Length: 509
Image (cartoon, rainbow, N blue to C red; front, top):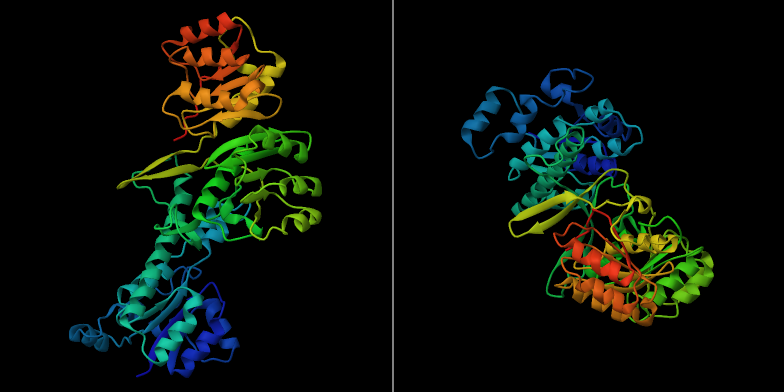
């Protein structure tokens, strides 16, 4: 009796050649719908599902493969005499190979204006069921979900498709169906009010293997979220330079998140996931110069993100120092001609847009997962709570707004000193707030006179205000909320510093 192969694929890549090779290996082919038509048009003999089930497709094709003639042929254990006797009594033949990939649910829900009804119609039922049945019986049934595996499967069938290879193919199937179900679950969960359901399922698709992880002894890979619509390094186009490393991606993402805070031309320099220089200007050249001047030491060997096209003048300025990565929405040809002379300099283009829908931030802990909304919090500087006797001037409000946007992305404890559309000093990741302030003020040096200070959390003591006053800071923005707020307010009033409360904090661990 001939062996049988069941083919039913939405992705027709390589289908006719695969079917032809199976036919030449004396497999009897079974198929459905468009797959069957494609095989027939190639002149390859093929049976319809209805010919083996002796039952028509019904409900517009919703029910066609859910039949004992299909699943009995897949799930019967070939070495089990009772199973094989039942097949014989029921006149069911075994199916020895399954090649199935599923209705394009991911592509469907990515379409603008897709309706829930369209999404539901693209929830595949028969496909996953056949795949899971075949994968469960991998010792007897070869199961293929990825056209990239066709050649290897044919080679194995011509010689020996080993147990290990069959098991690997089955594992790929279970990953594929898990990914598929996770996308469906996520889609329908977003239609409910269950932001944090009883089980949390997330699925990502591999972008690339990385040379190593955070350190050379750690392995790593990079994955992307399907159908993510915001700016993402997972969707970036690399125009020049070496392959990205794990640390490159972390730092580049930090730079991208900061630059997305700004609508006007902005440039952000990042080192070790903290912004070291941020500038805004009338054009991107002006913005970059300000970012560079914010910390010309730390920017060396760092990553720069810009939210406008890089022109020739900006490229010439960028080229003056060693940088690991430059991220922008685009590069002019003249800019590319200049920057690509540095063979190792990575140039990435990313569409600079924020995701429209609220997303989750996932952080792994030993044996668990923390899930929270991404920090999209912002404040309107015109509605800030003025805590001191003196109100900030219009210029100070302008600078406070910049400082607040930047401090949101600095590791806690965090202090940012800013003035005149650029940062002057950043104190990041310190164990106490006055320590972070001293680092930021020391970096700002004499330029701190007339500057503003932004803090990611409240001041439980007036020591940070005293340090700011000594350096010449004239305005402070902080969340407020300490039981000892009055101590800081009194210290500000003593030194003529304007202080505003946001009533919002931006801790970042």
